[in-house]
Amino acid sequence: MSAYPPIGEQLDDLEDARTEGRRKMDWALQHMPILQELREQFRESKPLEGQTLGMAMHVEAKTANLVELLALGGAEVAITGCNPLSTHDDVSAALDANDHITSYAKRGVGDDDYYAAIESVVSHDPTITVDDGMDMVYAIHEDYPELIDTIVGGAEETTTGVHRLRAMDDDGELKYPVFAVNDTPMKRLFDNVHGTGESSLSTIAMTTNLSYAGKNVVVGGYGYCGKGVAKKAAGQNANVIVTEVEPRRALEAHMEGYDVMPMNEAAEVGDVFVTTTGNRDVITREDFAEMKDGALLANAGHFDIEIDLDALSDLAVDEYEARDGVRAYEMADGRRLNVLAEGRLVNLASPIALGHPVEVMDQSFGIQAVCVRELVEHGDEYDAGVHDVPDELDREVAEIKLDAEGVEIDSLTDAQAEYMDSWSHGT
Ligand code: NAI
Image (tube, rainbow, N blue to C red):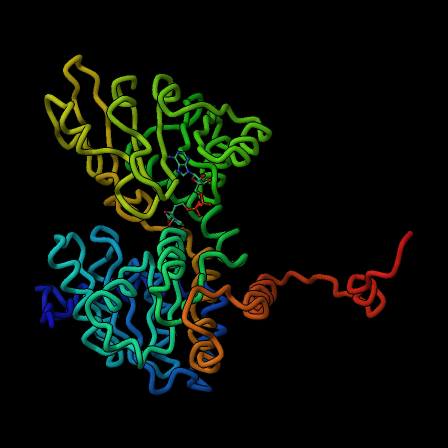
């Protein structure tokens, strides 16, 4: 098995990195009331005592606070990144300094080291996996199936990971239970919509120093992420154009007042393109041929497969770094098409990217933490396969958040509860 080393053995300026990483984590934690509350509970009751967690996630300050919460709950944690460009080395170093945490995440690693780091995490013999994109589950099933017997279960953070898991489950190949954290309301309605919308647009604006006002912003895919990007771009006075393959999603976008058209038509008029489909080849050679000089191309989907960069590179007569995080591809006719963050998810992989706002990730990671607790307490009640997050866990996290925000809500009276449960009443 791989001997890829933890980050603590890779950095020269380790002490400085740890200090800076800790500073980032402290700032984030101040704005994470759900994780703060769960920290108290986990510190007190140690629900994860005796468990080893293997994680592959975007290693930055918010994730790091989740990791520390899990360690406070009694777990030993080994973690690596789920994207070669989203790791903050200083945060990774701060985590690795914790006696109960080993972090292998390092920014900018090549493919071989990326997968070697996953193997190093697997070498800790995890009893629970926490993934963002399913790389850990995949590595275990493909290469270390002998571990499956001792794995209690897993939790998956993102849409693409859940899609992969459901496909695996349909083929009867998923051998332990995994919670679809992505699909639960406290995650998807906030993280995918608001988080992706805000952080993708702000990262693009800051990376390019350009405005959205009066521009045509083309959003590829009108799912949860696409809705957030479209709404927030419209809020910044852009003209929003949506491309879709699913008729009801296309109709929703149309009824919201956005223009809807095929990508090849949008390519002619778009100034900024943001793909959010989780699918491959959304912007292709035929589209590049139509684009205006100066077009900005960014991807917010999980993998770097939505913009066909091989075709773009093939068409280009010249390529150069136009700014930090912006690669210009010059066409034979002089047009320059600008790709952000190498076509990787822009809100996490751009050099200045910080990922979703802290408050949003507090909710997503609150769900992750209670799912891990549920696996330890009731894991044997779940069969192998993909599972929805139990509704009471989703509500638990929502209630902590409302409480922290000082928001009070009504509760059903007995008569109302009875009415809602009854089918015998008419008018
Ligand atoms: P979703 O399934 O709700 O939406 C995807 C939409 O894309 C669907 O409406 C689908 O019909 C459409 N689509 C598929 N192929 C298309 C094509 N060729 N052209 C146009 N539309 C197409 O998924 P969701 O939750 O919006 O996630 C999308 C992607 O973003 C996933 O890869 C997910 O993992 C990722 N994600 C990224 C985040 C980030 O921080 N950047 C945060 C959360 C999710």
